[in-house]
Length: 497
Ligand code: AMP
Image (cartoon, rainbow, N blue to C red; front, side):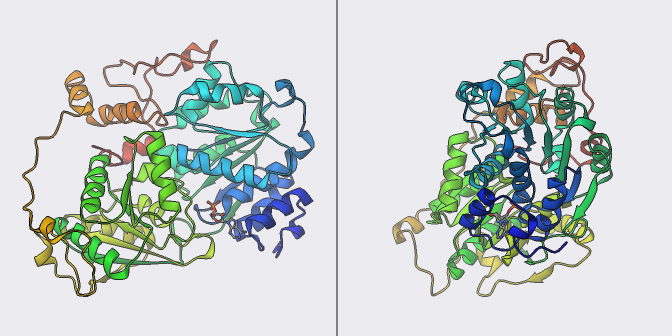
């Protein structure tokens, strides 16, 4: 079916009205394929990257299916959770729920979003009052189950969004626990969306979906084709000057700049800010409020550069973002696809450039293998890497200096000894533990959306066991295996300090 309008897809007038107000006229390819299938009650395995319009692809038909259940009754019993949408990060969860609110504003259905990193008390009242559609990160959802604020026994539709990312982040045990709290798979509709289809994802789909209809809008493991991709060969210590040169000479705003570590993100943002670029950083060490503020400033066009780690940037939905910079190449090639999927969204053209230091060339080779094409190597006009190696920003004749001449003459202060980090203590505590486990556990401590992993010594992170009546499934009280994909991956990269 090739519907050229939302009306042809058979959506209810209240949804059509909301869609029209969102400014959409033509359904995107994933919407054309997914909407009729979901409306027909089929299970769907959707291969679609963020930016293809997949959220509306599942949200609109879910709203349509649940619309008859809308109730104005204040009784929580009249508002059971009927659709559960699981997302790997709080940012994606928030954005999905915003879309549901937007598309569902005339349906009378209730929705909310729960995620870690904020006081659960604020969420309890809303969840207890009853919502038909619940968007959640897995860990916080289990916290709500433990608090008995939510009952999942009446879920009719389950969505796993960005399932590949859930798998990468080690969420599968939590998801399996959640599955046991839902009605049997055969009695619910199951939708799984993933940008990539690894064997692990297929295995997960086999367990969760009933005779799913497979829909794909991009070839497997291909980057968004509208994104123009280039690479600059540049020494690590000249990257900042190159970034500043590009941002200033093109006078470009809303540049999303990826680095590999939280510490690196903070440091780069600080340096760029000092050099006069409106910059902020978004990573797992930032408070939820700081992350939302940075995101909102970026969306409003108030930032030239937003420095982000892979995990924090997951699911960011920023329209018309012109440029993604891979300031450091990801060590897992799939992350490159996720990163560049931030630009060139829903038909817009975008640009992604990678800064490749000599020691990163091997990662570029891996990325090119996954893309099945070469990334064009280019040089920046007017940029001299050897002059930039001092880390001073290079300016062209057209660049306006953004800080005073006096400031630029001030010699760089020697590095202060770094303060002790949370990791240092923990590394002492877990001397024999595998470094990956220690890192992941600490990552969890800093980002509660991350699932818990067990240390090699068998000790569990200090989080209470869950799900009464299922002691074997208590969180953190059993030794839990590392998911296969994680085992295959090189040393932990994302958001490592
Ligand atoms: P998603 O892949 O769901 O994250 O959507 C990516 C972006 O596409 C979002 O900013 C949506 O608002 C936008 N979008 C979704 N559907 C359409 C459509 N039919 N026409 C134009 N833009 C859309």
